[in-house]
Length: 252
Image (cartoon, rainbow, N blue to C red):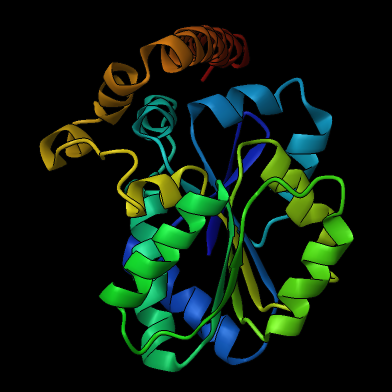
């Protein structure tokens, strides 16, 4: 992977196909791989949340799951190629796991949602082995859930819990889970289960998926996007001005 740094956050410059191929190769060899996707909100929170920043930096592969990060990185002259959306990567990895015979475990969301997501996944990928699933409200007994995942025989673990809880949970227990691959998938189970609709393709491609999410959950999402997007814009402007000033001082 070609890794770059953006606001002290590692980013791997890779396409969707390259990402799936790289992960599949490592899982087939039994090489543990910790994956994370980064969007504007996560990038902004990493600037002040040391535990979250450490969890992201500990990952073996970091994909960009937000057009804001893609545009911001390109604005700063970084060679970012494309967005690798977490929900799309999830589907591609399920297809890869089905073909390769790798069992998967779904962890997170509510009990109803994760059960429905597992049912939908089984219907879409009939040869896929779902080793187990469990809801995401287990914080009083994390050890028993970790033991459940390990005993299941799963090779790939998908964790649908909000940030930064999922990143910190994965980083805290990665050596005890017994899987070869672990990935945080945020609200993906809600989408798969049909609880939340995904934005139309044209909005995804034009970077307006965030606007669609705001219309679906205005009270929760408006504040999140308004605050983090403004902070990110300020970070970009400050960094750009600093780079121009330093270039002039050095005579470049």
